[in-house]
Length: 534
Image 1 (tube, rainbow, N blue to C red):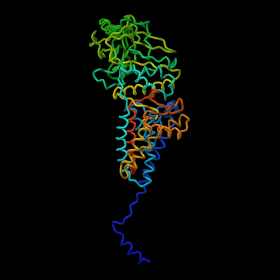
Image 2: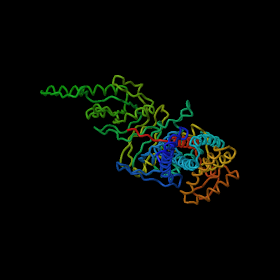
Image 3: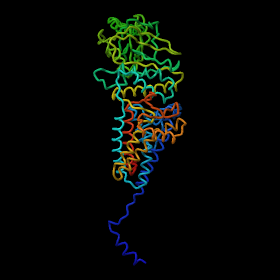
Image 4: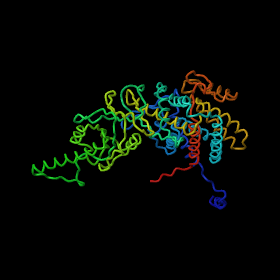
């Protein structure tokens, strides 16, 4: 027996060695399955009739949301490939702001098609290259479908903002929030850089109480704080001269932590007298410039203001707003067109901001401070969001952020495209036709890409309780007859020309969704091993 085995061992040369590819396939398979599971988790929240998710965090906080990026952000995903989908929705959020659910659903559908192609024995690199080609072709098709829009055409901007809001929890308020989003973005567009909008110039202040109907756009500043009422200071000031200060109006402390023992009453009196004269000296300098409103930055070293200094400020008829956050200083100074003052010696009249009115307003069970009629106001704006409870308030803020991002996309790339699954079906049809022209494996892979895009209209119909197969088939038929803008009208439950129904979205949302989803899928395809490093 041994004699027969020996020559067989001798015969196996290098060329005949068996390479085990099973592990690589298993890992790729596991990655795709995990990423698909994440995609199917958010799939039900796509579209105007999509369901909402209730997320309970480890700190017993409850969030109700429909926003794909928020849902995935709060989910604790452990599998590395599935984390890529969470990052994917984040990057869509930063690139376009809307379409965060769409991008994940498309990626999930592409991965499903990749599984089928892999099982047919097509090499991952071939699939990856074909997907890249198909996505470039898809961008051309989308650009050909797009309708140009002008920023002066406010109706179109409002339509696209309300389309974004329609799929949110606060959709019934879209008639109020959409024009508000458009106005706030247009008011911060800088003529010097017309294609750029910095959303940090739009401050959203949340205040509990009232309903979302009470949300308003404030051309000025709003502080979610009370005016300092100590010693009966003023709570309303007309023709205000406003200073933003970053120093403390309180007696100085020693640099190191130490205590001073005072054994004599006369010394005690002297210390108090010195404190008083120190604070009075500061307040006289402030009053000398004509300043009558002080915004005081929060201090960590020592108290920004003491009872004594508040008393003197009230006597000098200066309105005081204390504990202004350090992060807000830049926004405040830009709005008021003034300079922050870091030292009492630098306190001059030219560093002040001017406004017609600073007043404290009662809202619900709290109070806010409004500054209106600002002279030479910077390109900023404030939105005061109201809501009956914290969940609605948070969701209203997230929805408003999405609407602002949609308008920002239109400012950056001024093209609109139909919604309601119309662009996806049109892409699917044109890519399917293009796949027939291609040779070899490429055509096969492009056809799979085209089929994957049908997931969007399919899911829209499914979430609206319609028959997805009948709807998608009818939609294909309409597009084959040349009705490019035919889409699913979820409200009527049938297929109509979706542009006439005012369901529109920015071109940038669709193009970045396709590009990012394809990139993510290609990356997952290229991974053939996971190495854990301890």
